[in-house]
Length: 288
Image (cartoon, rainbow, N blue to C red):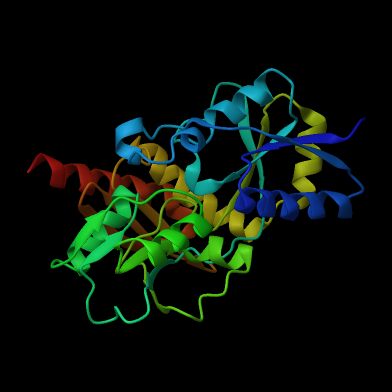
């Protein structure tokens, strides 16, 4: 077979994630080519996610390249995946996860004056408003480097970034004060820190290749978080968070939906029941 064609967004972070997958494929003796796709979310970098619609905002155009045969696999930040993939698509592999945590990156000299905090995420906004009730949350969009430049040049005192993106890009934050949020402070997005590899569900060759690069432990976390996310039927324009902490067969799951939260512990083997309980509890809160 000819080289596997990898579709992805064109940001430096997206390319770093493709590098991870490409390296794993090469270890299996499989070569790849790259196809860069501009998504709706890449084209509109100024509007808030809630304004331009969050369902598949960074994914759908890439799935179209899979569907029409221009690409064999697609590399995504798992947190960008909509709760329902396009028809005929599946996640064939996830690679070893990076940290799922969010970071508050504070401009030098502003540690005691957090008046304006930047984020484009409804989930992060909800947490920031709860943790820093005296601060104003101001929309900010763009890749990691762009947001850091805006922090330095515009009227932000701090911004929120994902630890995984900072680490994968090797960005030095030593010039800033950095606070890492725990899941109890800021529940991560579903799949945050995970790179997911999507392919056509009927492509048996590609599926066999992807089995070889799949990280089983990350796959367990991905399965839990995706299941609860699918039950919620939400997208990134809403304040939605899902996070699973797994240790052996011990499991702790965090769920957030538009300000309503639920945390439950149990056994990994019972994760579907646990997730359904969380979804039911969140929707009962909505009905009150």
